[in-house]
Amino acid sequence: MGEILEGMQTEEARHLMRACLEKESLRSHCLSTAAIMKALASRMGKDPVQWEMIGLLHDIDYELVGGDMERHGEVGYRMLIEREIGEDIAGAVRRHNDFLSGDSQDPVDVALQAADNISGLIIATAAVKGGRITEVTEKTLRKKFKEKAFAAGCRREKVMGITRFMELPEFFSLALGAMQEIRVDLGLG
Image 1: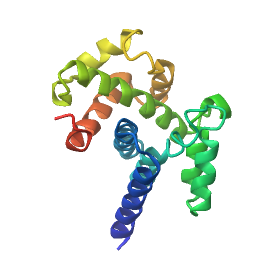
Image 2: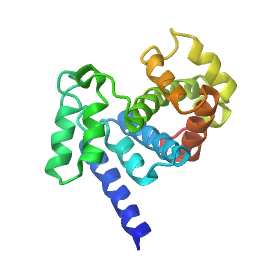
Image 3: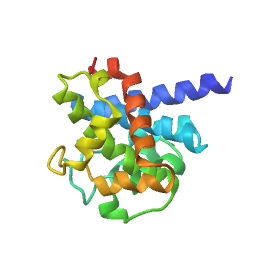
């Protein structure tokens, strides 16, 4: 019974994310971040359903605030609290904008920062492989990670935060595998 309820919660989070975000690229980013968060939770002994939901909802307010980093995260937090989504999820959404909240050392926050940033690097790497994420390897990802001008929006220092919990090559492999599993949803055959 618990699994059915958890699945419904995840689907509700997915539906809410889609209702609040119109841009397909932002939806794909949230799906990617969610897949990575779910894999990280399993690896780190945390709740995969909760972490997946955090990934799905972390940018729920991005279009509403027009990318305003003075409001991003805070507005999302209030949106989730109004929908009676708990502090464990809503708080992580609030804290993921470290421009407002500062750096957190909580494992969920470190994981979300890393997942949020690596997802864009993986999508950009897939784009240079003709949109085929199956052609991206961990080795290619390591190379692109070192090229600061490539996917310049990827805050590499936030990705490096995950090294508190695992080696970087393991994280690259885990993140890439998680996104490859949802490649059809991402349109990255």
